[in-house]
Amino acid sequence: MASVADRSQHEAPAYVRIVRDMMSRISQGRWPVGTMLPARQALAREYGVALATVQRAIGQLMDNGTLMAHPGRGTFVALAPGNAGAASVAAGGERQAPASPAMARRAAETAQPQSLSNATVAIIAPVSLDQMPAAAGSEAWEPLVVRALERVVAGLGGRTGFVSLAQSRQGRRSSWGQAIRDAAAEGASATAVIEVYDYRDAQSQIISAAAGLPCPLVYVTWRPVPYFVPHVYYDARQAGYQAAEHLVRVGYRRLVFLQPFTAEWVANRLAGARDAVRRLGLPEDSLTVWPRAPGGHPPQTDWVEAGYRVGRQAAADRVLFQPARRGRERTGIIAVNDHTAYGLLRAAGESGRAAGRDFGIIGFDDAPQSRLVGLTSVRPPLEALGEEAGHLLARALLGDASAMQVSLRSLLVPRASTCPTATGSTSGIQSET
Image (cartoon, rainbow, N blue to C red; front, side, top):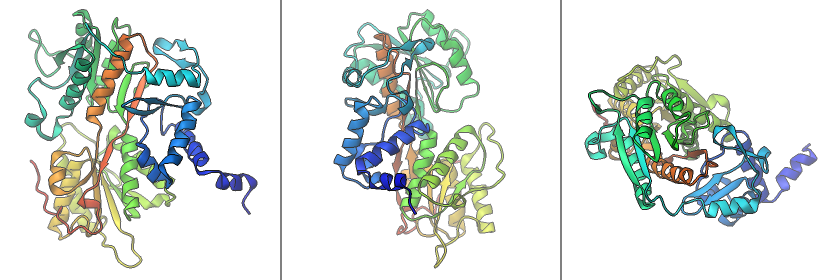
């Protein structure tokens, strides 16, 4: 028999249940402070309610200071539920006075500064000046972030300077730390450091150089930084959640996480996929990892070839490409990135199997070829990373150190590879190598 508490939870109005669920996500760390919430229409679809119901729930959380709306940008987590009304930690470990709900609303309304005149922002990135998206092909992430950041700084009246770690400076290449210190010594008003790939030792150098820096620094990265450094990152764990949730919602109940190699970003995506399986009420064994003993992730890994090798082995072992029959659940594959998905699709095509018809597959990063082959992918919010970095820098230059961390969600782009009625147009993938 259901308890009184269970009945109360079930009988509560829909907006109250949504408030409780959102607060649970925040308190459990799935939506850390600084996280941008999904669009309200997307939340309404997820909860199965009218848009007005979601608006009411968000309004209540804004009133108590848990959420904060930034005009023209979105709604963000401002405080964890247990800390509503508590002091927030600012840069250097100093504590700020608690903000009332009314103060939080006023801060949201004035969060975007109106001017950065006379400010010079040094942008540090590990790419060369001529490595623009058209020239660099599918891997040109940093230039997209740089362009968005430049657009925000210029729009607020500031100037930018670019420092490339890939180009020699006075006869030598700069390290991350040296480039940061040089920018400050040369009079930069603020510094933005862009590291959206897993560069060895980059984080430790950046964190060390930021300590005691005379000007504000914002770090754009691919993971949360556990130090008091203002940073913007995209949530790889949430991206894994999005991938698994999409496959389940379009009808795949048997999920396989294709992991030819291990890395921190791979582990984050896998953890998010497991979160989705648990939250959607599926048995934990609905998601399996294959191969069970992957190798490491050495530098210069050929991802397409890695996906092709495990794809051929999977076809031979009948692990991944089990057709949907009566009593057998459809298989949805989560590849660690688009390029490993390309390799697997090539192997599947050689064995006469096609995505969308015999199995589903989703990748990450939304590389340009994914559009051509119809691969569903999770696109990182590259332009938004640059835009948010620009806003954090502008606020820091005006003396506001309250917004220390911004977590952004990726965008899931559905295509034929996860459509059960697809005709299999993604089977003929060729290696890019």
